[in-house]
Length: 159
Image 1 (cartoon, rainbow, N blue to C red):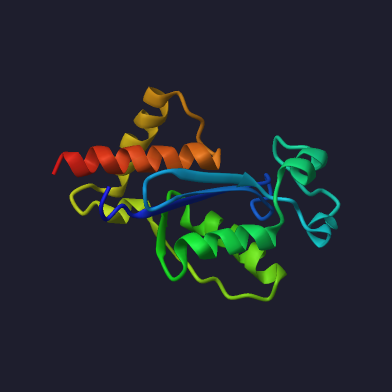
Image 2: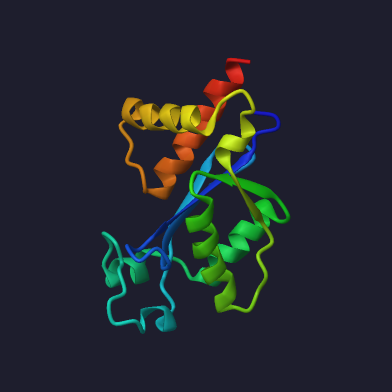
């Protein structure tokens, strides 16, 4: 899998700002995924949304935001990662980095920008169809990344 681009997705609460889970590809095409333990100051808001997760689940099965940052740094320092939702993922990553006063060391770009021969609408349609074919759920970061990876392999073999 030479020259495989990196893909990333972040699941957030309904308010869009609280990072709950994250997934990204590794250079060999595997997907790394984890839940994120929320910081106490993230939970100060009255109506914070944890999506489909409970606080106990995030705290027991998740990893600290700092550990997420360290893993991402080990896998993708100074890389451009491709995402289906740049604005949402940037906001969620900013929250992770801001917690520790760090500047993000990855740049996000729209995944559809990898395919000059496709319009963004065509890419989005193909992505939606692939979710159905694979029986995966949009908004789950590991599924988002897996679909972007499969779509890249499919579009790459069409060239």
